[in-house]
Length: 251
Ligand code: 13P
Image 1 (spheres, helix red, strand yellow):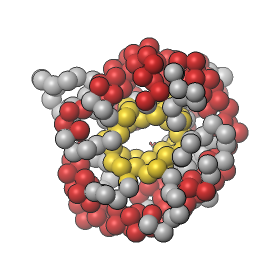
Image 2 (cartoon, rainbow, N blue to C red):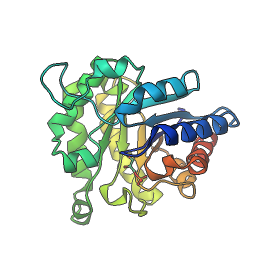
Image 3 (tube, rainbow, N blue to C red):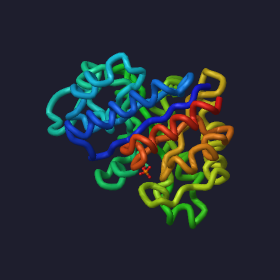
């Protein structure tokens, strides 16, 4: 299975900065032999710009959230249909920053995943435990509960999603999960997904949380780590390209 490296820009960027960043990524990607799959998840306001800049580039683009509703009186939200108009391929759902700052419940996240699929957008479903949950030995219970809500909502269509394991304590902290720690959780998620899915291996499972040029190869070398969801390092051309290069070498 080809790895997927997805950048999550979070609330960063500007018209000028996006242009420079994407030009750098496109130029670098052209030099990689049989590259892995690559995507960038961007602030929604830049969707038209990024669609133009990435047309026919082989780099896909995604949103960082999608509404659980089809249309109507939901101030501030963006529907899957609107995202589709800009050929948006992916939408992050349930990122820990949205669970934490916007109070998104497991059920809300599952509804978003379901709605994204209905509009032909691949949800990248984020799961992960807090530091307190890890320290009290609840990691597996938490991630399995978060994923079970999505499986319950989408059924066999779970084969069509992407899952991202992002331990909250590793996000933006420089404190990465060790390859063994990440693999342990990915194996549990894999078993849960295979049981629910109609396709052999089930969907891809990405790791996210302080992945960078130095640690990417070790993490991506684990049997159940199918790619990365990259925050800070996706904003720096050389770093993002190094991660892509590492992912492209491992099949
Ligand atoms: P960092 O790579 O900056 O730790 O962010 C990870 C993340 O949250 C990606 O969604």
